[in-house]
Image (tube, rainbow, N blue to C red; front, side):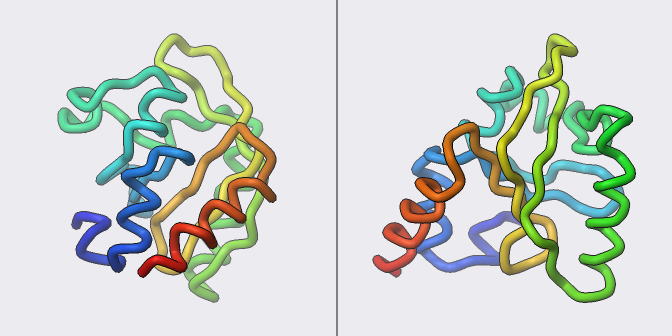
Length: 131
């Protein structure tokens, strides 16, 4: 399912702006859709995504998996997850720190950023005001 089918034009502009990395995922670990900012941060190309070679569960270092399991349980029970810090492996197997990860509005959307979360939140609010 495309993010554009789930969200309005404001969120689509946020995804397309590439000021934050965004990906749509499922509970089985598949990444269904991702913007260029996300793919660039982790050094993957669109062809990696289309081929099914990018799974968020495989990108997660072992020390973060318990936190992801708790977040997934929260998501299943309440429909939301509080933002939390996370790391992912890049394509070259180097761990990259992401300041905060947030599951937004509908299950399965991560916002990823390396800049201070407050600046990202202000940019998100600005973009969403133009819905």
